[in-house]
Length: 171
Image (cartoon, rainbow, N blue to C red; front, side, top):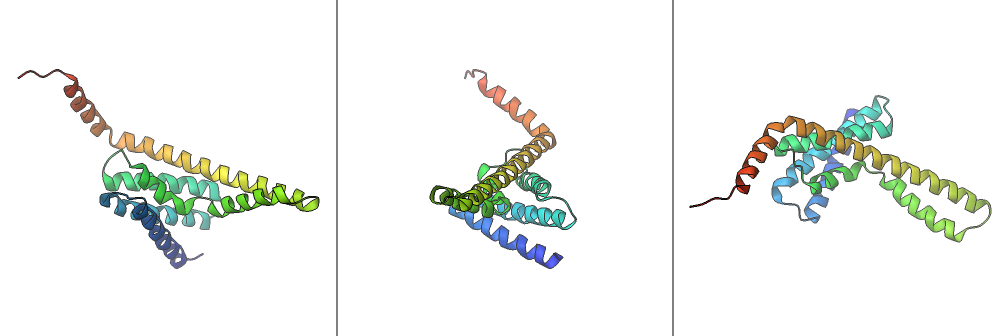
C-alpha cells in the first residue's frame, strides 16, 4: 500500500464520515472536526498497518487520534459524541458485522457440514467485531483521559464558575 492509496482511502472515509455527521444533524461547527478526525484516523490506521502493526492495535491508535484531533481542533476536553461516532464509522469492522449477520441467517437455515462451517464463520466474525469494538473503546478512553490532562486548567476554571453559580446571590 503506497502513500497515494492511503491518502485516497483517508479522503473517501472522511467524506463518508462527514456525510454521516450531516445526516445525523450535527451542528455546523462540528462538521470540520469530524472530517479532520476521520482523515487522521484512517491515515493513522493504514500507516500503522502498512508498517506491520496488527489491525487491532492500529485501530486502537486511530481511535485515540480521533479523540485527540477533535479535542485539539474544538479546543475542549468535551468532544461531542456525534463527532466520535461519525469519525469512527470508517474504522469499524462493518464487513465482519454484515458477514456475522449473514452467518446468523445461515445458521438458522442450514444443517450438516454447512451448518458447522456457518457456525465457525459466525464465531470468527463475532470475535472480530468484538475485538475491534473493544479496541475503539480503549482508544477513546485513552484519548479522553489525555484531553482531560491537557485541558485540566479549563476544567478547574469551569468548576470555579460552576461553584459561583451555587452561591445564593442577593441584590
